[in-house]
Length: 230
Image (cartoon, rainbow, N blue to C red):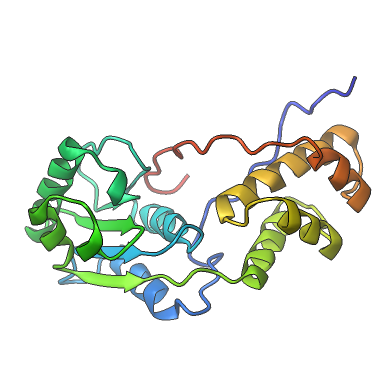
């Protein structure tokens, strides 16, 4: 029986520097300026498909600003922070929508800043009308999804940070068998990392095939709140 190592390396926290910005250069530049506290900007709305990097940018902004990242479905707890990054706005129930509405009003009064992300343009979301209109008060950017080549480059970047030599053959195996959104790719990489550490072997195509043969992706769960730097 193989014994899993007690400590497993975790993927690096998202940063602006690790975001592949191809096609989204203007959006990431303005999110960085917003996180830094650009005067006159209180509300920022990002939208794009799954895998476009919305969560990556929200978490990066929260860390950079010393603010709070609010994962999908989590309660919005009001406290004295310079920035709130609220993910997947379409998942908010009526009570949370009301809380976000009040938070945006606070932002307009200069008490905080609010960065929000959703799957589509705010005009198409099924939200309270007053909240939908307030999302249009500030900057709005549509994030273009990464191409497969860009996702492969990001997967290799994450693998390098874990000390894993990821061959083209292993990458093609992963892309042929599993969903290609970034969350799923990171979970697969974590699994391969555990397997290589447990077996004390480098990641070969043969090892990857065996490790992934019966692997099932876990359910996606909320990421922890982020406030400031570690």
